[in-house]
View 1 (cartoon, rainbow, N blue to C red):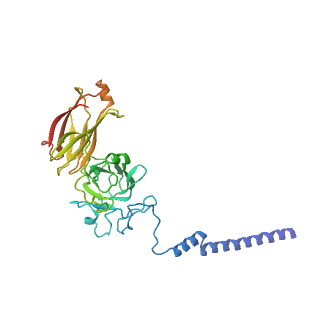
View 2: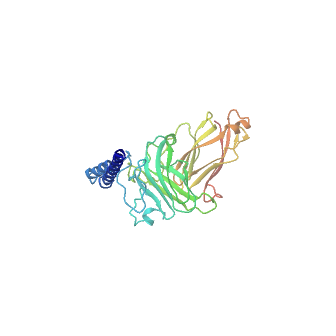
View 3: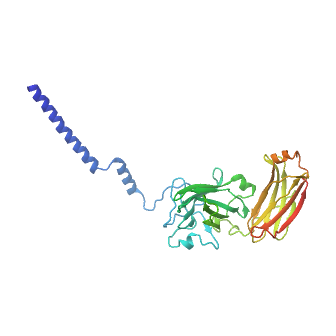
Length: 358
C-alpha cells in the first residue's frame, strides 16, 4: 500500500513540475525578443539615417532612385541607379508625357503605360560577354507579349544585339541585352555614348494583330554630355579609308564601299562592306540575281541602315551553295545592288550592277 502511495505521489509531483516548466517556457517566448530580432533591432538603431545599401560598382551609377508609382525591383543582381538619359523625340509613349505625376525618372524607366513597362535596371560597360543592359519588363495585359529591338545603332553605327523576349500575360521578367565585345570592336566602338533603337511589342500568339508599340527611342548611357564631342550625334564617326577599299558608290545619298574579301571565312566566301546612309530616310541595301564565276549563286543579303547612320556588313555565299555549283575558287562576282527607302520601294536611290574581281 505504501509503495502504491509513493508511486502516485511521484507521478503527481512530476506532472505539477512539467506544467510549471511549460508555462515558464511559453511566457519567455511570447515576451522576450529572440537573438535574431535583438541583433536586427540593434543594427537598425546603429545605422546612420543617410546610409545606403551596398551596390555593385557601376561606372554609370551617379544618383539614387527617384520615387514613383512604378518601381523597378532593387535586387542584389542589379541595383537601380541613374545611368543616363532616354529621349523619345515625337514619341508620346514615355514616362515624362504619360506619367509626369508619378515622379518616375525616365533615365531608368523608358516606357510606363497601362499595358506595359520597359526599363533598364543597370548598364555594364565591361560584362563577361560585352556591353550589357539589364532590363526589367512588365506585361500588364491578358496576352503573351513579345518584346524586341529593331533598327539598332550604337554611336551612329548599325549594331544589332538580336534581342527578343517573351513575357506571358500578367507576368514580369528580367533579362539581358548584350552587344558582343567583338561586334563592337569590329565597328571601332570603344565607349558607348548613344544607342538608337525601335522598341517593338506585339501579341506573340497573333502576329497579324497590330503591335502595341513600334516606336523609336534614343538613349545616352553617359548622359547627353557624357563624353566630349559625342552628345546627340547627328552622324556616325568618320571611318578612315584604306588603300584596299573599292568604292562602288559615294554620292549625296549613300556610300557602298568594299573593304575586303574573305575566302577563308568558316561559313563560306565573304565580301565585307561599309555602308553609309546620308539621307533622312531609313534605307535598305540589297542584292539579288548575283553570279559567281558566271554561275548564278545567291547570298540572300539585305541590310537596313537608318537615317544618317552607317553599317559594317558582310555578304556571304555559304559553303553548301559554292559546293553545289562546283565553285572552288572565286574569281569574279557580278553584284547587282539596289538601295531604296523602306517607305518607297518603287523609286530606288541606287540600281546598278557592279563587277568585282577579288
